[in-house]
Amino acid sequence: MINQMSTETKHKKLIETHSNNITISDMNMKDKFTNFENSRLKESETLLYEINTKPKYFKRYGRGRIIKVRFGVNVGSEFSGDHFAVVVSKNDTAYNPILHVIPITSKKHRTCIDIGNILINDEEIQKLQNLYENTQDNSQKKKIKDCLKYYSNRDNVTSYAIVEHMKTISKLSIIKPINEYDYINKLKLSDEILEEITSEILKEYTI
Image 1 (tube, rainbow, N blue to C red):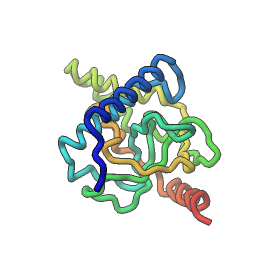
Image 2 (tube, one colour):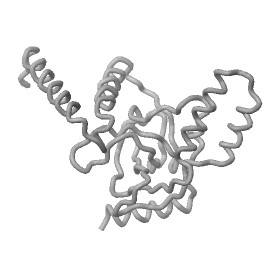
Image 3 (cartoon, one colour):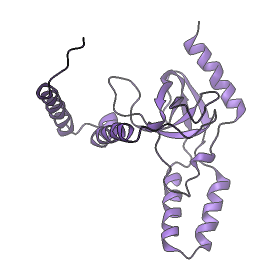
């Protein structure tokens, strides 16, 4: 029979956890701790969402698709933070709650693949610019402008797929697009780059 922890003991542990989080927050550390507070909040919100909604169906993602993931704040050199990632799962379905992904960053690592400026799609940006110029709806203009600004900050930035940090994530950790004008769901790596990533995975994780 499994011993059940008393409510008082559970609350004491949670209070200690909260105290530790406050201590870390007050240190005002940078790098992976920059968004520490938001990360802890989103983590608890996601767990509550999972408990309350018990999702059974999920968006399907094809291999090579680009998504944005909340990796959280992790121990040591484990990959942390909100980052884009490439889906490497095969045959994903709407019933599958997890994905295998490789994080994307602008910094080179030991085993990384240069995937170019994957986040900038000139055709989609031109469509947004044309739409912005031709619409009279101010709320619509603001949404489009938000997307253009977001991706303009990533112009001329080379991205790298960090194979050594390949990870299994919950689809609940995927960050939603900025709004309906965000073109992230249309981004996909070429078959050539996917083959290069597959080759690097085999070298990194097999004998």
